Each structure stands twice: as structure tokens, then as C-alpha cells.
Length: 207
Image (cartoon, rainbow, N blue to C red; front, side):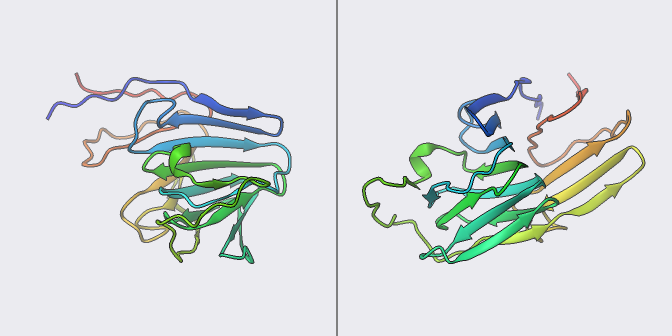
């Protein structure tokens, strides 16, 4: 099979309001791909009254800086505090809302890709929302990242995957590069989506 990397595209700002910027690198707005979406969220001011939602997608949130408060449960009485270096898995059908008590930086991955049509937001002050048919009693699962590569030039922290969350359905890592370095050539049996948040990545590939 002769496959090539996708076209390199810049992230698309899908939300830009005072206190919050969300840039989508993969998904319906940026790459027109409905299989998966991946966004980088930068929170610069407290955001503590976000709407409840009950998505039809599974979501993986990687907290890189600050903390996220994940409220869940029918009465909203349960809260998971997810701090920097940790993540949280939100199964589809889980009624949640995610708030940020202060500045934060997160990456959120949705399977299938995020779409407002399948997010099922409960807007405050709006009309009553019927319980979605896909709602379940599932709850968020917090995880702690694990450094799977630790070298002078490179640290790779796995937030989700076989090591960190013992889940082989998806792996999500943050790579921090301190100085120029190179990976070995590889021919993986998996698809890979990459977000370059800082610096520059040179991707070499066969014709």
C-alpha cells in the first residue's frame, strides 16, 4: 500500500472570545474529516459557568497547564478536578460540564469528530431539554500521564493509551522537544494525527 501524509494545514480558530481561544487542527472545520477532531484550547480567564452537555462522541481531554473541573451526574453534585499533567476520559452519553477556575491549556480529542449537532448542549436560560436517548449512567475517568520517553532532548508523556490508561483504542501523547532531534524511520500500522503547538516539525517521507 502506497500512502502519503495528509496536506499540512494550519489550525483554524473555531472560538475566539475574550478569555478563550480554541484552535482546531483536525476535524470538520479544519480538515473536513468526521472521524476525529483535535483542538488546542487556551483559557486566559476563569470560565466557571459553561453549559451542561451530553455528547454523542467520546472525548479525551489532556490538561497541559492549569486545571479543569469536570462536573457530572444527574444533579451535578460530582466534580473531578483534573490538574496539569493529567487527563480525563468522557464516554459518549455522559452528561458533563467542564469549567476552568483560572488560566489553562488543554488538548481535546473527540471520536467521532466534534459537531454542535451531536454535542447536545443545555443552554442556560433556554427551554427545557429532553433527556437524550443516548444518555448513559457512565462517568468521567481521570488519568495521570506517564513519561514513556525521557531523554535530554525529548520527553514524551502519554495521557491515554496502553501505558497510562490501559486502553488500546486510542493513544494520546504530548512531546516536549528541548533541542534538535530526529526519530527513527517507521512504518506504523496505525493512523496518526499530529498537532504542532510550538516550534517546527520536519516530516520526511518516502515518495
